[in-house]
Image (cartoon, rainbow, N blue to C red):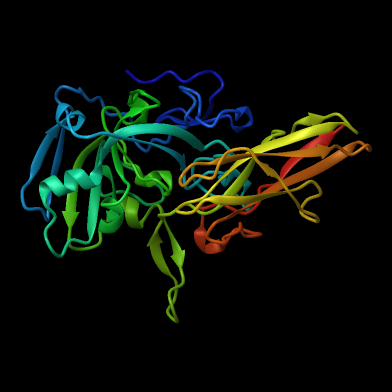
Length: 356
C-alpha cells in the first residue's frame, strides 16, 4: 500500500509521486514523520519483506543472497544525514527548464539505521581490479525525458569503490521506524553527502564492476557538463552535494508588517565538509550580514540558522537572499552555471516578500 502524505505536503507530481516538504515549516533538525520529500521515477514496487532478497555479485569472491533477517543480524549503524534532490529549487531557474518543478522542499533530514555497505562487500570479498559498485532498485519503467529509454529499465546508479567502502549504509529504518513504501521499503541505500539520486531505493542488487557504469541514470540523466583540462566539456555523473543555504521563513510571497522585528530562519548544508558560515542579504544582494548558526557543525547534516531583521518602515517589496560557506572554503556561486543544466541549483535564491 502506498503512503498517504500529510495534507501539508506539496504535490509536484501525482503519479509517480513527487512530493515536496513545505520548507517554510522547518523548525526541527529532523524532518517530521511523513514530511520527508519523495522523489519517484517509476511506480512504487510492491515488495514483501519476507520474500525480499538482496543479490550481491559481480567482481566478488563469492555471490551473496541476503534476506532482511540476514541484514538485521549484522552489526547496525545509525547516522543522521540530509538528502537533497539534485533538482531542488529548479523552479528558480530562468528560463524555465524541464523536470519536476521543485521549489525549496526537495530536501529533508532523517536518522537512518542499517548496515554499512562496506561490511556486505567484505563478506562477498571484492576482487582486485574493482572500480565501482552498482546499486540496483526494484523500481522500473519507461521514460521519454530526458531521453527515450530502450524499453523498460530499472533505476540503477553506481558509486566509486572508495565511497562504497566508506560511509554508505544499506538502510532498513528511518527515524527509528521501518522504511515506508515511498521511502524504499524494505531496504534502500543512503549515500551521505551525495545528492539523493545516489541513495537508491527498493534495493535488490549490488554488483561490483571493473569498468565505469554507463547506465541511463548515470549518463543521460543525473549528469552535467564539466571542463577537464584543454578538451571540450565532458558529461560527468552528479555526485557530491554543493554548499547551499535556503530561507525557510519568510516563505516566498509572504506579507510582513512594516517597521517590525522579524527573525529570518533557514538551513544550510554541504557535501563532504561542514557549514561554517551563513550570510543574509535583505536588499537583493547589495549588502550581507552574518547569521547565527543554531545547530552544531556536523558532516552530512544541515545546519539551521537565524537572522534578526527589522523590516522596512516603508511598504513595498523586499528580496531576501542567503548564502553559505563550508569548511572546505566553498561559498555559493552568484549565478547558475549553464553546464549544470537543470541540476545543482546553488546560487542564492531570491525570496520575494511584501512589506505592508
